[in-house]
Structures are given as C-alpha cells and as structure tokens.
Image (cartoon, rainbow, N blue to C red; front, side, top):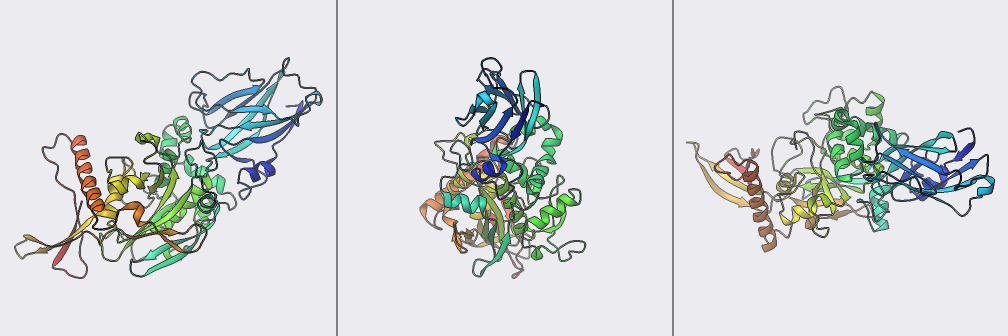
Length: 483
C-alpha cells in the first residue's frame, strides 16, 4: 500500500500474549485477545468519507462460513455475511491521531479462530495491501477459549514450562527422566504447523481441515496420529525390539526438539526410534506450542504394555493429557470438560487410524465407556481385572485367581511448580475395592457391551471382551484381562 506504513508491534504484542519466548520478530498472538498495530496514512483519516476495511484469511479457499475469512473495519459498516463463523473486530485506539493519518488499531481475533498462519490485509480509498502475516494460537488465558485454564500456576506449568519429568520403572520402584520439551525453540511454530499440514485430513480436504482447527478436540486428535508414522508422514517410528540399527535407541533421547528438528530437516520423514515415553514427550511439546495445556502421564501396571508383548508383569505406559472443554459430548454442565487422555503411541486403530483420544478422564473415572474418543480402551488400561487360569493338559482352563487391584497403579505426572511426582490415580479410578470403584467398573463393562450391541446389531450375542496375556514367569498359568 503506497499510502501507508504499518508497525505490527510484534515485541509488545507477543509479550502480552505470552509468546515472546517463541519470537519477538514474528507476530504470534492468542485468539480471543486483542493486539495492537499502528497504521500511518499519508492523508488524514475520515472514516465517514473513506472507511478502513480489513480482511483476515487463513488456509486455502478461505470463506466466512468456514471461519477462515473475516471482513471487518472502521467504522463497523463492513458486515460479515450471515453464516460467518469467526468474526474478527477492530477498534480505533484513543492514542490515534486521525487528522495526521496515524491510526492505532486494536484487533481481536475471536476465541473460535482456527489456529495457524493468517494474512491481514487492508483497503482504504482505492488502495489495497497486505499488512502482514501473523500466527494465531489457542489461548488458555481466555475464558471464552475451549482450552481456558483458570489457574496461572497451572498455565505456567502446562503451557510455558519447557522442562519436565517423565516417570518410568514400575509401581514399586518409580524412576524419572528429565525431559526437555523445548516447545519455544527456534522454528517450532513452522515445525508444528507443518505437522498439521501433512495430516491425511488436510491432504484430503485442506479447506475443511483448516476450518476445523478452531477446535482443540479435532487438533489434538490429529496430533496424536501425526506423532507416530504408521498412517502418514508422522514424526516418530516406533521400535520395541532389541536392535536399533539405523537410528537412535529410545532410551538415548532426553528432549523433543532434536526429534522434531530432525523430522523437519530431513523432509518430514520419520525419526528412528521411539517408545511410549518418547512419543508422549514429543506430543506434549507440540500441544504446548499450539497453546493447549498438556502434561505427560505414566500409568504403572498398564493393561496395554510398553513393549507390545502383552505382558502385564511390571510394566508401564506413558501418554499425555490435554486440557479442554468437551461440548461435543452433550456437555452436561461441563461434566466431561478438563483433562483428556491422548495417546500418540501406535497401539490400536481408532476410526481406522493409529491415534487415541481425546478421552475425558472424568468419563474413565465414572465408567462412561460409551463416549468418544477411545474411552473403552483407556478404561481397560487402568481398570482391567487380571484373571489367572490354570491350563490343563487337555486344554481346558480353570480359573484360579482374580486380581482387581493389579492394573492401573501409581498414575503419575509432574507436580505443578516443583520437580516431584504427583499421584493422580484418584482422577482415573475410585479407591480399589470400594463400592464406587466396583460400580464404575461394572458400569464401564455394561456400557461398552451395550455400545457394541448397537453398532454390531447383526450379531445375536455380544460376549465380554477378553484380552489374553502370556505369563513370562509361570508357563503353566495364563492370566487374562477381563473387561
């Protein structure tokens, strides 16, 4: 625009939007929160004669009905079309000097803006120009954003903190790994947005995918699939064997950034190798960069183990939790809002893709296994009963022992603001053996069976699901997990 100059005030805006750790040169803002820019015209500004019109767009084929385009201006005579999904707004700040053509503009992307890179353009009189590009992220500081987290200490821990602890070992001897999440390292914005742009849903329908990026439920589910490489151009290749030739043994990683940087620099080919805690650590970094509060969680004596050998004995599994609202579940006064389980380790397919979640922790606690996404799977990981069967010479089996306490112990995450372990088992399950715990277990099993009967109505009977586990210490006894 030959008649104007613009200052995006990146340093000031990024500081106010808690993104200055990412960059002070590139404008990175959080949705639902205003930012300021200065526009200098060569002539006095008279909005009654010559209105100022702005347009914000993102993705391919932007449109107002998808929320990927917004038309707004001063005065507010540039009306959005009726189906506009995400309407930006602008106000003239009192520090402006219109008679000198100096405009201080306060621009606010709504709290349902699709995250990602946006282009901001302006037209005035007969001139049009691009003011610049900016990145919009989720905003846990904004009450209207689905990822809003009210406690500042938790926001600092689950969004801003770049260092953490991942717990490993077993329930009796818990050990820890210091993990560098590095979510604000150089080029992490481009790396994380590239992850979104390579997901199969974007490749199939870019406009629809970008529009859906307003929803943290959608975005987090995409990320779970993209951290592993089984269905797509994902970040990590898993390896649960004994040879790690051609790559790095999972135990040698101690941070996410080297993995993500390598993936980006080698043409988005999977990095070798990862196991559950590596997958979880990398996903936590991506989620925090995008603005979704996230923490790494370890489940000891998990019913779906770390080594893919279905051995329950002394194992653990690591996933992440992301914080968000779940109005897609009917939202009975926010019953299922809060922490959601997301598991990027490729274990089972969900809707045809190796991903898991988001599964509300509250639904797991209550045994509401008929809810999406993947609640029955996670419920089994923390609640399954172990049954030992004696296998006779003729092949018949005799039930000899049932252990309802064995699975899902010492569920752990890092404490807020301190380098110590916080036990969150009580958020997943009631006290073992209590009436509440047994009732939730029975409800979980019955809800899952009812759901299977509904989706597989052609079957006359639906039997309880049995997961068979091979015992490594006593070859004559085969424990089963009964759901």
